[in-house]
Length: 121
Ligand SMILES: *[C@@H]1O[C@H](CO)[C@@H](O)[C@H](O)[C@H]1NC(C)=O
Ligand SMILES: *[C@@H]1O[C@H](CO)[C@@H](O)[C@H](O)[C@H]1NC(C)=O
Image 1 (cartoon, rainbow, N blue to C red):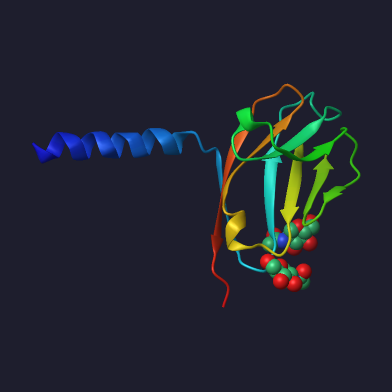
Image 2 (cartoon, rainbow, N blue to C red):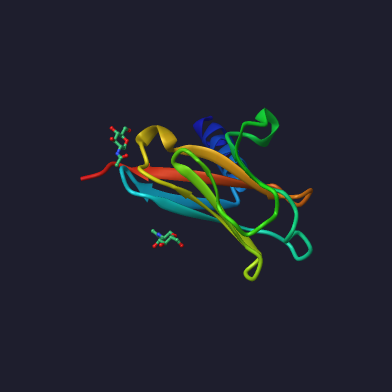
């Protein structure tokens, strides 16, 4: 009777990992770049970067659609209309930064990001 339990546990793992669109790895005390692609037509739309789940609405960075960088402490966001993506940089990573983030452009598709932080040397 152990087998069905293991199978459902495995399926749960698979289902929950499907929610993550982008997985990024960084090293403690270093920086990491997270690339958030967006669809054609969203170049001049608002860009948002969230901590945690989308529904928590915990915005770290917000850009008005221009290409100039926006900053919030160790976090910065740079929008590149040419490649239709915005890059979020997190400097001086700590182990506590690991976890879920999200990015979205305008009313476009929300993308869930998993950030893994590796212990520094
Ligand atoms: C992150 O992006 C910055 C600015 O584009 C670049 O200078 C740096 O090399 C990038 N770092 C990594 C780890 O890709
Ligand atoms: C990096 O963050 C740690 C705390 O997590 C702090 O002690 C250290 O001074 C920071 N380093 C830089 C270069 O900002």
